[in-house]
Image 1: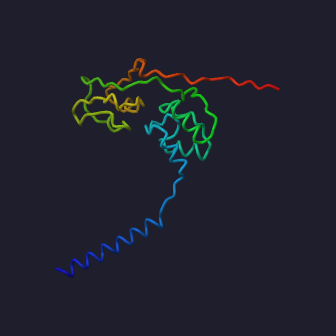
Image 2: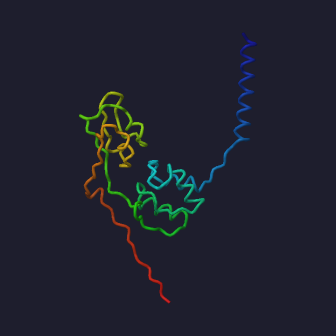
Image 3: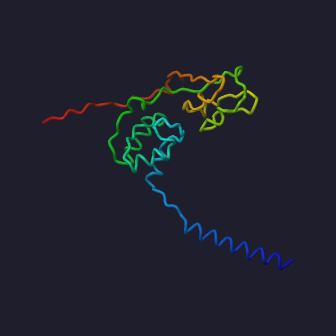
Length: 182
């Protein structure tokens, strides 16, 4: 009995040393600036910027000098924070990258068949439900990314625009045209 305990203790110590050495030897260094930019982004993983998620977009902004105004969910707030961090000129969101109006997903619960495809597609877990039961959206968690709409086989999910109130309204980004004088 004692020999078994001593043997297991020695093995545990050896494996601990081996894992500690492997953690030091195979440590992956990350770029701290990429991590800071990634922390600013909203983490919706919606792909509206043209990249599969927030981390690849952050890497492209830092390494490849990608435009900082391509994150519609982050909007003006994220763009200004990234511009400040990277000491770049802030640019307004334009074209397909414009900040969309605030919207929420709404599920027609009478038409929902409980397939759970929308739950799997939601990157922020804002949809509540289980298999073969109706689902509903948690309004406070929904970011309006529209990723749950496409997978729904019965089209019971619609996006509703949230009306502008004093709590949802914000000042528009001022665009001042610069004129070159000679």
